[in-house]
Length: 211
Length: 211
Image 1 (cartoon, rainbow over the protein chains, first blue to last red):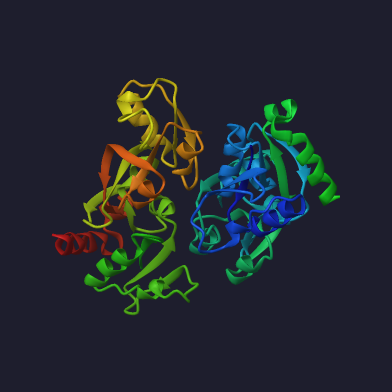
Image 2: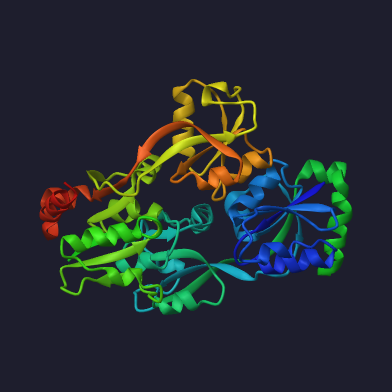
């Protein structure tokens, strides 16, 4: 049976809605009283795993899920060995640099060498500043990255921005966009090539729905 | 002014209660309507930052907080450059190995070489299995680690266990304890030695309260 890895959090509702359009009903994951992390579609066509967004590529990489839906931000940060096949056109956000509104800097290029940049996306942040040939110290954080410039631990942050509300509330301003991100369909390469459990057919259906 | 880094999550309530015993009132962080991540004690003696447990040592390492409270599990996993001074005697839990109740293995020593172990605590897991001279592949996950053995992605997990309820609900059994963990008081080494903002006095007070 085909297994799909579904991300908890902001992409969940759109992911469930998308899969419903190709006849897979995993709405049980939207029920707040549900504690199951593994359910079957009522028609018995497929199984779904509800996992953290960062874990979706892991389940697909190891072939425990043949397909998964995840934000491009996670893929760029983790660089997993999966086939990234379809831009699903939801979950729009951008990976941006932000700094204090009242501070001395207005863009990444203003930052002094060896300054500190806090981020949950250490790889993306390093890659961007390396591209600018600007040596910075990336401070890895797990949450509330917007606090780092407020307390003076970092001159800037690299973080995912959706509405920009959190930045505004914390007196930060978005200065540079590293890239725009949307939800992506990823597939276990071998399962796709061998067309196990009709992966190719489902990918084609998802492509049609999105187009 | 002295700054204390306080962990969100399971240690929060006990941390606030402990600090109250030495005259620091950060109960505002327990108010679910509070959105501030940085508050001052009403007496003006100290400031507190509310951050993810994994970020507490980062704020202390960089000297943005002179003191922090965090679980030993985070310290063992991250190995930050901080002084770990007082066992605060709350937040009891243990880092354990668990595997399927109905599976073929009963302890870490039963596991076959090159099997897969899923964990959020990659460093702790690697260190333990290296100590056993048992080569395993550690699969890094961010959440719901208990799902990995259920879907067959891993033979075992290494995870923090408190009541054991999650393990039981998922048909897993705890087989080996790597170590027991409690909340710890950590301090920025230089601030402690130089006694900035009377760090030494507060540490002494906390020691007394715990003893």
